[in-house]
Every structure is written in C-alpha cells, then in structure tokens.
Image 1 (spheres, rainbow, N blue to C red):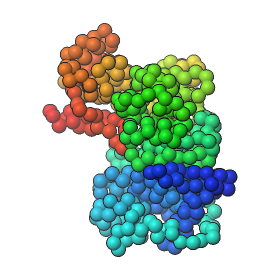
Image 2: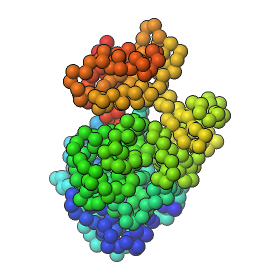
Image 3: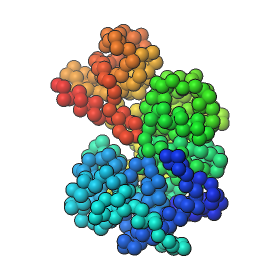
Length: 502
C-alpha cells in the first residue's frame, strides 16, 4: 500500500486518458508517469535516498503533481509548504524537517537565497523556471530513462509531513504515512462513488491536505481527471465547470459564498454531481442559498491534518443534514467524549475523537505532544461536538474558540449562523474579547453588502434570536475578513486587530 503505485496502476489502465488539464493543456496518465519516473531518477542522481525529505514550495501546477509523486517514487518524504509563507516561516519548516532538497516556484529565488544559508541540511534547490546558476525543473524531466526502480516503500513509511498552522507556538510537523493517505483516498473514492469518468475541479491549494486527498490522491487512485486551476477566481471556476463538464467540486465555505456573489445560471452547474465542503464550518444559510440557486446539495464534511484529513461526511445517498458534518466515513470511527475520555450521551457536547487507519504516525520530533493528542489509538481533535441518535455529528466549535461569558459557554458558530441569516450579511466571524465584568465578551466582525447597515440595526435584529449573554457587545464592519490561503477565516488575526485598537 503506497501512493506511487496508484499512479503506476492508472498509467497501465488509462494510458491515454487525461490525468490533468492545466491552462488548457492536457497531460495523459502515461505522460505523467513518464515525467514522474524521470523526476525520481533525477532526485536519485542528486543523492536522494529513502527517508530523505524534499520540500515543495509550489502552487497548483504540473510541477507540484510531478514533484509530489516523483519524490514518493524515489522513496523520499514530501514536505508541502505554502509558497506565500514568509522567509522566517519557510526557514523554520525546512530546518525542522531537515529538508535535503527544495522544489520551488521561480518567484521565490530571492527569498530562498536568504533562507538556504541557514538550513544546513539543504543540498540543492530546483526552480520551476530557469534561474541563472540554479537547477531548473525542466532539466529534471527532460531526459530519457526506460524505467526507474526506486527503493521498496512500506505502508508505514512516512509519505508526507504537513505543518499545522501554528495557532499555538511553532507549527507542528504532522507525519502521514502511505497507509494514512492511501486509506483516506480509498474512503473518499468509496464515499463519493468516484470513477475514471469523473472530472474534478482542483482549485483548493494542492499543498493543503483537503485538496491533496480529495482532489489529488483520490483522482490518481481512481483514474479521474483533475481540472487544475492555479488560483481561485469565482468566474473562472464557473467557466471551467461549464466548459470541461466537471462532475466534482470541492471547496471551503468562503468559496461557496463567493460563488453566490456573481451572476450565474443553474445550467452552468448542471454537469456537477457532487459539491463538497470542508476546512471550516459551512453556514446553513449558504447551503440553502446554493441549493436554491444551483439545485445542488452541498455535502459538508470534516477533517484535520492529523487524520489525512477526512473523518466524517454527509452521505450522497440517504439523509443529508444541513449544519451537520455527517457520519463516519468508511474505515473511520468518531466519538464524542468528556474530559476523561468517556463517551457522552447523544446530544450532549464533548470533544470529538477519531480512530482509523488514517490517523497520523505522530508529530515530527514531538513525542510528548503526540502522546497528548493520540491516546489508546484515538486522535483527540480539540473540536467540541454533539452526535445525534442517527450518528450525525455537529461541530459546536473549536475548544480554543469557545467564549466564556460570566461562566456561560458561548460558541461563536451559533451566533455566526444567526447573523448569516440576515439578508445583508456577506461574511461574519465572532471572537471573544476581554471584559472586566464578565471575563470575556462577544464581538462580531461583519462584511455587509448594505453600506447603510449599522451596528444598532444588527443588535436589534439579534434581540429576539439570542439570549442576552450570547449577543455581541460590539459589532465591527470590515471590507473583508482576513483569511489564509485555503480560505479559512483567521480568528487569531481578528483578535490581534481588536487588541491593537485598545
């Protein structure tokens, strides 16, 4: 069970079928397999051996696809890095992962020239386009080899190290084995009944685990075609769906919100059979508006890097419950427990824990943190949830995002759902802010499409919808909410914004 064998199999079963289409140029599975083998051979020529780490600082591109599977073929471990990170962030990840090689976008040459002086493990850097005096990506795939016989790769070997966002302290390196990623790709294939006829819009950042599993690895496993887009543009996504007859779209809540802000027709979405959402809680108001506008039910699910990532999803057959992240996916079990790890009665709030072949090997070089997160094979997610009698899970909020107002627990998502129902609200995020009287108070940050909407208007709107302690003491209007590259709203930045204005 290793990820590279999926590509090898697809190239035998579907040699002339498109593996991906990028900027109107298509590449078949046979061509991709050949380039991957050439890349793996070039890595071995650079001295890369089994267990070495190769960092990818690339966006959605053929270079990422080739380098990812080429690295795995060479028996090495992939370290995907967000190419928009600062030099300090990049240096930390390269040093912590002991990266021996870097495959990077050419625009990062100046940044990496500064960084690589401080990364002692680094032996070489390859750039996506020619840079004077540096190795170029084309030179890694433009030579002839009959085949490449890499080292034997076991299912428990680490395939990918993903760095968490680092909301507390330094980012942690999540070690995902071939088995972790393979089992999750297989679960996604089974769950969504994927076949080689599927055409998957791949616009989520491919260096992020949601896209990596659902759009990338599951497509290679199935022989489906990836419609690879370099960045998210609502108009381009809709045009791609219509032109390429896409069948699957995976997005995060902000993407669906943006798709609702542009003029489109139901016909443009008619080829889609599945729209799925993950990465953050999807407001019910957006689910309802999207279904009304397109006729498509968004299937919401849940995952985290430490679980490679998917653990639960609303099923495509049977009951789909808006506001829920669904039920157990194949091979995975979810439970809701109290602080002692004892399962709570259905309907009560507790911490969501997960068990399955997708649960990470651990955090790189952090055995104590690993032991706190994985107990008796169960991964403690840090998310507060409830489970109904039918096994559907509802995320209440992150443990760390919970607001305590005068001893009462307040979950931001509940307030955000109510605000999203307001006709003029485009986006909203709720955070806790210090309060002398109650310890914490609720504050809402809002993006509105009505320039005359006021704080008092919204406070009045909430009066009969939320108990007093849950209502925001203050509401601030912004032109946009801060987000990371996957479109997740950054509450930490909003808290920092609040503190900086004090």
